[in-house]
Structures are given as structure tokens and as C-alpha cells.
Image (cartoon, rainbow, N blue to C red; front, side, top):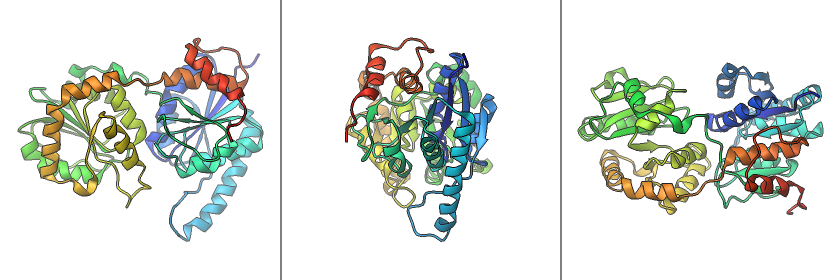
Length: 379
């Protein structure tokens, strides 16, 4: 009997890729044949190909929310991508497709449905993005990171949370300090601007460096091409991007300053890190990070400040308050219950693939969630 086969898709940013990693690891260990479909030059390719997963490229078009002549060209690229997705699904004949979102996922999902392959989608943010809204009616279910996310037109919406990157919570503070070249004599502040970096956070941190370094040691993940050699100071470690060492840098952190991308936010919650969130504003996004940050702050799981209000004085004050609230925040973070996302999603994928148990048997919650795929459509 041939092993079950799965086709993953998702890309554009690391947030649309990294949650797939835990599922890929679990399914490969269980003997599944794993494939990935993405764009030719996207970040998803740089993350997935080093894992040894078979990677398939498709033409993709960007889903813009503004008028542009490029939209006309991208309409043809999307149609070409759907045709390529259909051909790929017909050739691979996967048992199931898992979509993590981003514009690259739309043609893969629609092509798979034309080939009559079941699809499970996962939405990261509090409110669904454009890609999820476009494919919602064509997938078996949309799984969500947040318990109160609503997806119009979806057959089913299931709260599963997000899978953690493998080993994320197994980092070593000592190794993180060594990697960053820090002594750990003062509280360590980890600054994370998302997979592409954040110019706003970078600028504010570097302006405030002399005053910050009298209170904290700083690990700054600033994005590719954004390291500033002229800002080098004792107690300040800069990185463009980190992969495997991230778990050690996270373990070394006492406080975190971060954007509010959904997956990164939920990772910080599960790592129980007191965090100051600075969500990306509406000038550069649809406002999803503002919603994510409001959700976390409203439950006492993080502090937040809007990018428009961020300056040196506000940053110093907010970090001081965060440090004073550290123990209370950690208690609330420890009390916040999150689903066993990896187990739930693996159970759902097995159910859709029509397979018996090929991964470690799930808890009762996983079985119950998977069983809900057999319930009548909710719409």
C-alpha cells in the first residue's frame, strides 16, 4: 500500500510557512509522502527546500487591495496558477491539501478542488485575509488561530490554534546569550520585526539605544539588509535573520518587543514571554495586526502601542511598565489554555485523507474535532 500523500501550500511571508513545519515533521515521521507548492522566488522556497521536501513552483499573482495596472496582469497569472495547480494535483494525486494562506495558496487550492482533492485551510489572523475569503467555500474546513474568528461562506470553521515550530520551546538561555555575545547581567530585550524586518522598530530602537542599554541588553532581529554596523555597541546584538538559533535567543529573552503577526504572537504567548506589541498600521496592511494586538491586550496577555504613537520616550516608558508587570503577565500567560494544535490538525488531515491512524493517537479533543468534518454544513 502506498503511503498517504499531502501537498502543502502557503507563502509570501514566514507566517504563512512556519506553522507548516511541525506538521511536515510529524507527517514525515509517520511515513507520509510530503510535497510543497509555492512561488519560484518566495520566502516559502527558502524555508522549505532545505528540509528535503519536494518543492513545486507555480505562477502566482499578488492579491492587491488597491487599483493597479498590475492587477490585470496578475489576473492572468492567477488563472495560469489555477491551471498549473490543477495539473499538479492531477499528476501528484495527493490524498489531501493543506493551505496556510497567502496569495500563493489561492491557485493551488482552486486547482486541487477542480481535481477533486479535499483541502483543509488554516487562517492565522483574528479576521480572515483575502486569500482565505476567496477559497473558504471550496475547502472542507477553515481552521483558525483565534477562538472567535468568523469566516463568511465557509462550510465549517474549527478552532485549532497554531502549530509551534519544532523545538521552539526547548531553547537554552545560556546558549542564546553565547550566540548573541551577551552577558545577561541586565534584563534581555528581544526585538522581532517579523520575517521582513520593521523599519519603524529598527529606527526607534537605534535612536533610543544609549538610554536602553543602561537598563537592558538587546537582541535585535532587524531583517535582511537592515543590520547597521554604525550602531554597534556593547550589549547590543544585531541579526538579519535567524533560523535554528531563534529558540535559544527566545529562551534568553526576559522581554520582547514585536510586531503582531498572528503566528509570532501566539508563539510568544505559548513561550510565556512578556511582550510589547507594535502592530503594523493600516497604511501598510489591512489592519489585521491591530486586531491581533487588541485581542492579546484585551485578555491581559501583552501590552501594545500603536506605531503612530511610538517614539523614544513612549518606548522607554512602555518597556519599564512591561518589566514591572513581568510576573503578573507570566501568570496570565501560564493560565491561558491553548489547543494542542499539531495533534488536532494531524487528526483532521488523516480524516480528510480517508486514512486510519498513521500518527500518534490523538487526545479525545482531536478525535472530536476531526469528527466534526462529518457534520452537516453550517451554512
